[in-house]
Amino acid sequence: MVAYVLRQRQFIATQQFVQEHGGSLQFDLVDGNYMVDLHGDAATDETIQKLVPTLKELPTGFTLIGPGEERSFWISLDGSSISDAGIGKLCELRMGWLNLSGVSITDATARRLSQHATIYGIVLNKVHLSDSAIAQLRASKPNATVTVDGDSE
Image 1: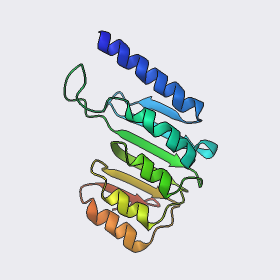
Image 2 (image 1 turned 30 degrees about the vertical axis):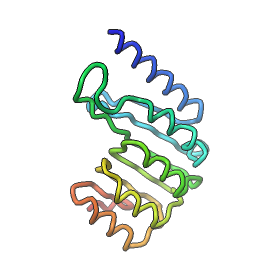
Image 3 (image 1 turned 90 degrees about the vertical axis):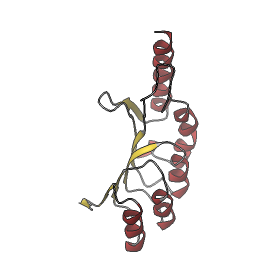
């Protein structure tokens, strides 16, 4: 019970920290994943730089309660103020799903995402990547869902 209370306090404090920076953090009750949303003015590289160290402190694997808590981050970003640097910082997290819309990334980010070990779903809307970068991303993640501007493969 003590572990539960401590972890609940940690989550609430982190949730408030994310909200103070204009985003939202939810806990998915079905799969136990953390859902992070940054949109509009909150969706910046600077915000990501501030949030990631705190998000990394949330439990994502074996905890005091026991094994089997494989939690990952489902991240949704919508804003042109996010670049390769911001996505690179997010890659420090155990991401399972990444939804990018209107984000200013280059083919270098697609290559980096293709090497991310835990990601199994990527949605790219209004991002300008080359066809070869998208093909590389899809080829490197054969068991993942990769959707580009509504066309999944």
